[in-house]
Length: 295
View (cartoon, rainbow, N blue to C red):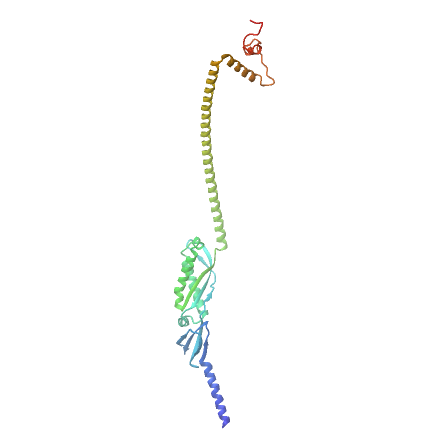
């Protein structure tokens, strides 16, 4: 009898253990849980801790609460200026409504297949309205925000929230890149030639203006020097005239001495004159009169 009781007690303990095992579950702080009964939603548990469910009748589905990443394959997109660009983007998303997520895509693998098409569509729609220069400028941040907005509008139907969309790489195909680089180089060379031509023209204008000013300054200086020289000559003539008027003999003697100095400056001076010439009047007599013994 005691043996039978022990057996029954053991069976009861085992059954209770199985029931407890199937009715008690723990929610991790990084998870959120849906409690389902025969596939129908009963409740959503977001807070971490120990929880209970009906054994064998209810089951749970766990989803991550953290920010998840999605890296779609690179796509070739045509911009508004008909340039082809290889775009490689990445997406960060979070499961915001686990029940809607369960009803629409069921699992993370299911949402990734749906997001791939949504991201591709938003990329093509947004980048199809901008030019290459816009993508390469500061407007790129605004472009990424528009792409994120477009993806989020569709992603909310799946119970997820798009946290961020980034363009990791936006490059031209090799052939297109080489053609654009060649065109940019020729454009820069053309601008350089224009700048050099404009600089040469400007230099010519400055040089011509400087030469004109130099000519005017030289002419003005020459004019002023002639005026000054004329005034000096006038003053000198007046001084000579005044000196001549005071002492004509001394003035005649002084002028003759100056003429002798200029005439005999060189070492090889040769003069063919008569000794009785007026030029040598002061050689024989300091008074300038005839030499002694002559009439």
